Amino acid sequence: MTFGDHVEFFDRELIALGRKPMALTLPQIIAALDTNGSPDTDTACAVFAETLTWPDGMTDTTRLEICLRLQCARWYCIDLANAEEDGEDGKQFLESLLIEYWRDVGRVDWIHSHFVKEWAERNFPGSTETPD
Image (cartoon, rainbow, N blue to C red; front, side):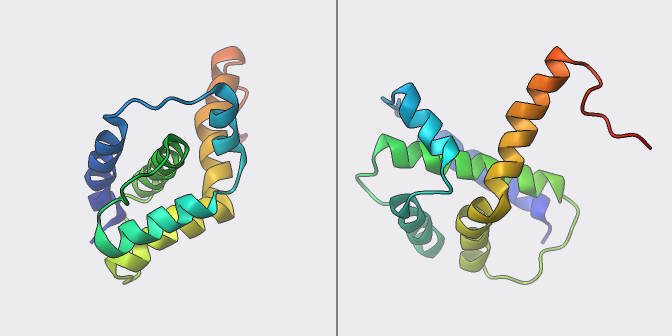
């Protein structure tokens, strides 16, 4: 199985979690982007990796953080679309992407790619190109 095979799975989860509107303040949204992850969100991701069901009663902050982690996992899988997985089972794969990768480098890389780099290219075209 390739990483690209998981993109639709992450898309479905994003749609399902985003159906109910989230009532969050700007500081709550920024905090979700600014932290490596909350223990509540790690727990929810671990439960999901085990059961493929999100826990009941998650706060909007947890749902937002999960959506960010799913977006990051989706981006990672698209980037490695044709690469073969290394043999992790489904639980290990989800935990490694939604918890470990997010905490280690995924959050920073994804935020840079989707916010910083896109902003720089819109405002300073060519500024993010690397010389050959």
